[in-house]
Image 1 (cartoon, rainbow over the protein chains, first blue to last red):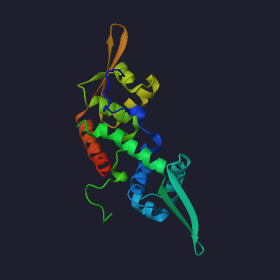
Image 2 (cartoon, rainbow over the protein chains, first blue to last red; image 1 turned 135 degrees about the vertical axis):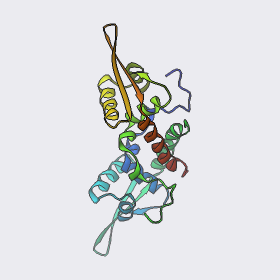
Image 3 (cartoon, rainbow over the protein chains, first blue to last red; image 1 turned 180 degrees about the vertical axis):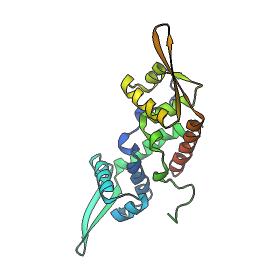
Amino acid sequence: MSDAAPETFDVNSIDEVIHGRIRLGIMAYLSSVVQAEFGEIKTRLQTTDGNLSVHLRKLEEAGFVEVEKTFQGRKPLTRAKLSDAGREAFIRYLDQISALVSQR
Amino acid sequence: MSDAAPETFDVNSIDEVIHGRIRLGIMAYLSSVVQAEFGEIKTRLQTTDGNLSVHLRKLEEAGFVEVEKTFQGRKPLTRAKLSDAGREAFIRYLDQISALVSQR
């Protein structure tokens, strides 16, 4: 809108892929580490296997997260990390949400 | 978790009623005005009548927004404003999301 200053919070610019509560938690956690194991993220977010899988896949499909599946002995091991695009998108998201927080 | 500092972003403490993108836009806008007309909020958020109605009702049901329906001549007029509980919840939400933003 014409009366909107550049730093005004614009709800339509918010990336829904990142904004979802669990996905936001994943992005925030992955932004603070080099990479993380599936179980570690699950514990951190206090969520379930199924829930985490769904949201991790959505972030992977968006190109924001890279998922690596290997084996540790016979045990499957899933690791995730932020991609460069994911890091950029997360910074953009934080910039947008900052406008909301700074209105206080 | 035991290693979580008080100012750590905790995804599970986020109020989903407020966090939804459109509802967040409504709350942010209403927090900046005394009250607003339906059409004004709709224009501001660039959303539809149906979409705005659904989210406004959800915020009303949570006790965060007070909706007043009157008539201007023969034209129905809907006005909304933040309730005291809504203002408190919004401040709490901003505090929570601040922890995320301040991690940068």
